[in-house]
Length: 195
Length: 89
Ligand SMILES: [Zn+2]
Image 1 (spheres, rainbow over the protein chains, first blue to last red):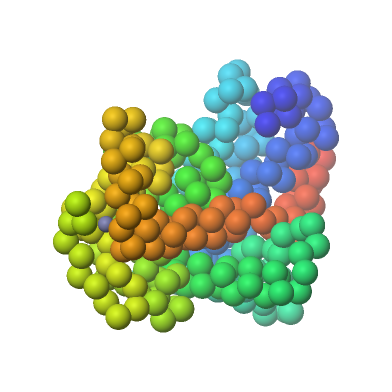
Image 2: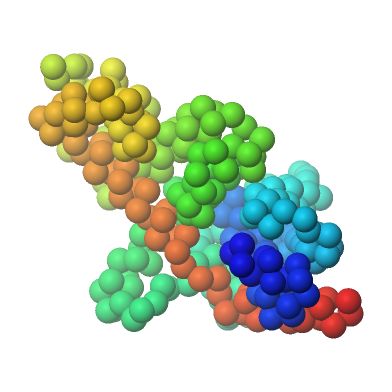
């Protein structure tokens, strides 16, 4: 990413376009995984686009871009969520088709390269179970799971993004994983005790 | 050695007093001096072993979800907006 950031900051339009797309897609993933409102996700993408575009015009430290982006994405998602304060929080199924029949409400596409039909079915089943399991977690825990396990950020990067201590990130991740494991196992009828 | 198991008919329960160590072990956060003892416990304890399996499944499911691309409709809208803001300057 750093090379693309450098080129974008130097005025390379292809690099700029790629970063602006990346920023919006990250925002959409965060929004869908953590906040769960497709309408908010569109607002948040627009806001992230504008902020990223402005930021790239005045960037000094290319290394700092990624952490900046994650913090910004988190902030715009929380803002668009706050706008609808009072509305019930919900996480849509990651397999829910869009209202227009498109995949606009589907958080996760079937990954390539071409898995067989059985693999697709079992992946799909696992994803919808995961979506249900995630929806049982408080948003603050979903954010930690998203950044650590889905985006692959380190404990330290996650802590910086969310303004938490590293110990706090570890503790939330542990609790979230225990809850996810309970939910995922529970739907198979092999619910253990857990805590 | 086996701690406090309370077995259910389906899955044996993990040991409460080992839970923090097992969680840290899965994340690679356990101090090196304790790794061998925890690994040995998990290998010999059905409850903790199944906890580890289930946690690994949950982690793998999250990683797999994170590896997937966004829907093409979202990608197209993101690209259209990106091009528009670049054109406007
Ligand atoms: Zn045990």
